[in-house]
Image (cartoon, rainbow, N blue to C red; front, side, top):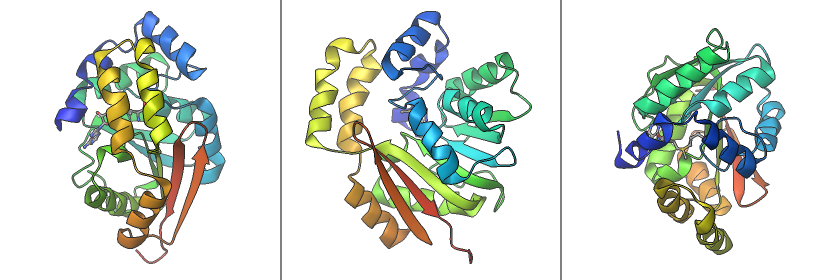
Amino acid sequence: MSERSDLYHSTYSHFNEHVLEAVRKETFGLDIGQNSWVTVDEYDHFVPWLGLTAESHLLEVATGSGGPALYLAKRTACLVTGVDANEEGVTTASQMARASNQSSRVCFRVADANARLPFDDNSFDAVGCSLFAHHLEPDELVRFTAESLRVARHALLIHDLVRHPAHLALSYLGFPLYRSRLTRHDAPASVRRAYTVEEIRKILEQGAPAANIEIRKFYLFRMGVIVWKPLTI
Ligand SMILES: C[S@@+](CC[C@H](N)C(=O)[O-])C[C@H]1O[C@@H](n2cnc3c(N)ncnc32)[C@H](O)[C@@H]1O
């Protein structure tokens, strides 16, 4: 596991404490157990865009402690498999699935998304990841996209930050509000590592085996990128 994903240990090991739930609700508008600046509106947008239905099976990569995966399963009644490199995150996610009676539709396991994903070709309808792409260098992003399109029948959804000077300034302005050392380190570092819309389009167009790439921008410097799989791979 990389040092960066290891940083999440302390966050995930006490993720369900009521005070943290209250902070997430205050910050994101609705607490779905997210560990990133992800709003429910964005997830609701992704459901029709990806065409998720009760018959779909989604692989959520870098799922963290599972909140967004569980939200999607509840919202669409689809099957979700979540993977993360962090064992604490996976343990907490599995506990949350049991506590919300969703273990029959949602499961979690440890996997490194920088390596070959431990699934057969075309095992899922789609692969999604939130706030993970900025952890990857351009060549890693291309490899991850190709690997995701191997295990997906239709598409990869990349949901991530957009790098912009005003976004970096905002991440520093938020310092008095951040409660954890991790957030104070991670917020500006994540913005610095993030891609612009033009960069991610160019990297994926040049390197990934895509039929089509659609990019939509969301409020406060975030983007959704869908890489549609060609019929021939
Ligand atoms: C910012 S968190 C996002 C968590 C979740 N997707 C969300 O939006 O709440 C980034 C996640 O990426 C995971 N991660 C980092 N590198 C990884 C890798 N190589 N393979 C799998 N997961 C990784 C971390 O453990 C962490 O849970």
